[in-house]
Image (cartoon, rainbow, N blue to C red):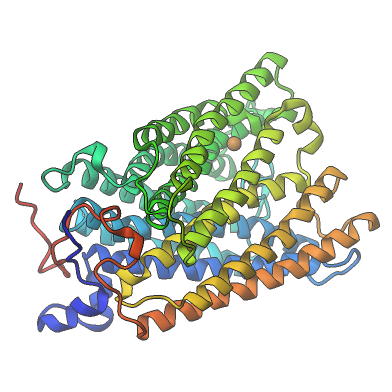
Length: 531
Ligand code: CU
């Protein structure tokens, strides 16, 4: 087994080259996958904090019934923008950042296949973010149609909606280019001997995710373009009076939206599948079944979209189809969870911060999976539609799932990225604070939903007061805990214990299969792939 030979950022800084752009221009023109990965991660963390501020404003408004911290109209803008910012600005770019950093290293490629397109993929994002966040400042403010942008409301909203549509188009183009890059890199740039079924599972999950992105981002682009033409060019796609159908928007949106859920969770599965074997000191249990389970989830994800639409008046037979199809996805997902547990079974376990986050992920994400199963049951979903139960469910999937896995991966790979070990004490503190406050925030929402509290409202009946106060306290605790992560990263970049070539003791022979050559940095030095 070969050992790692790549250089972390500090050891191979492009400043040392003596030529090529420096300062800001270095970052603007870079084609180095590590630089671009770093920029994706910084961008997504900034968006995570912006979306987090919106979430805390929402929770402040909901602290007590009758409070009027923000106007109801602005409250709706906040819930909409919180969703859009977290999905498109925080979680998706964060996973692309991980892909940029890790996939070339894992498969032994010198860089991503299309290094310049990689630069463009990233640099589309800041203008899109400015458009999206800037919409708060246009007449009428940001769109308040919900992150799902349902027609007919989204057709009637003010110009904030146009900015959101444009931003979604740009972010979609960025995602599609990133996905194409990942597919081509994985298929064409593997080092000799790195066969598909030897690839680290993170590469597999991202390859499958990339196909999902290429399949569904154009569907979203189509949906928002139809809204745009309904708004400005006299079409009636979603206007019943003109022969259209508002429910059709929901069909198109969720044909994108459900696979999108897996776009945000499959790379998380990949990260966790890298970490669990390292800290169990055993190879991953059931590697091939993991690959097939991931593919099954991806294929099935195209057949379940109308489980978001059980209350739109579809025939019972359609409800049954979408109910059973949704429940079927629990089978490959269960395979993955059982494989992680089987990997740990009789392993020589240790719980450094990456492993804490990964095992924490398995526990809380599985709870989100189970409530998803409950929501999938049509007669129950009709009761739970548009209640806080659904809000609780998808935050268990996206926060305890995607976000916790991102933190697990960040703690695991910070030694590779910075050359220094992250603080174990702060990592553990970050984990336990996040875990406790996350559950204080979102667990009560199950009860609120079961009791009938609707989502997307700034005020509520008195009987919901206690759980809402609790959720708000939890949310502020969770938000503040994330500053610990900022401290960890800054400390890690600036110094600390030097990371060994094999950063984590358990990783010997498990984590890396091929060494990665030194990176190229700028346009002048753009790598030419020589077969
Ligand atoms: Cu769904």
